[in-house]
Image 1 (tube, rainbow, N blue to C red):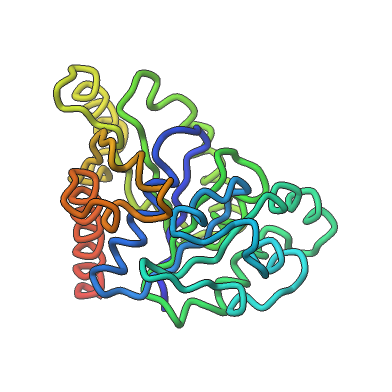
Image 2: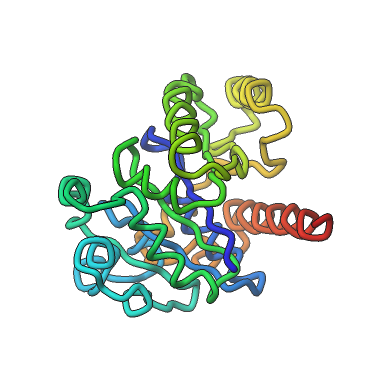
Length: 258
């Protein structure tokens, strides 16, 4: 049974899609069966794994709205499997209004796939509307990327309020997987100060691995590759490999205690 992790932050530009793509690929490279569910209408995670978002059909929109078989929608790449998205997903929130149990549509879809994977990561849209609620209902845990910049924690209270509401009403077992520091520059006092502030707000829940500012991370999506395929010796590739190992080690210890 897969561990389903929603990568979520309603702020844009925090490294959310970069994290979803590269962490999924890094887990795959470690030998895990991993699936990336692209749940953002921008579909950048889809193209980031080399899948044409304009031709991928069926896609996650068809799964939610048109009852397409989720297994038929999955596209296998050499980096990981992906449940692709496209711009049609932008209207799905409106179309869901008349559907019973609309908050659970993604959960039901992923339940048909979870026996095939060790990890399923959901790349969420940068908002707190119905798509994100669906992702939080489907997930076991959420991973929150936080950029090491001024106002890094701004808006996180809204996200955590949404999480509490989802836990109370829809998904009582939802937990915080961890907080990930992104765009970290050890040469600046600001990055160091933000890191300390985030650790104070989330004691014991911040990953030891931090994601640095790295030009290769920015370049890789334009080549349709995760960074470890684009430049495996870059600092970005090394960081996401380390994150995958840290996450996997945490889960292994949890399973051993169980």
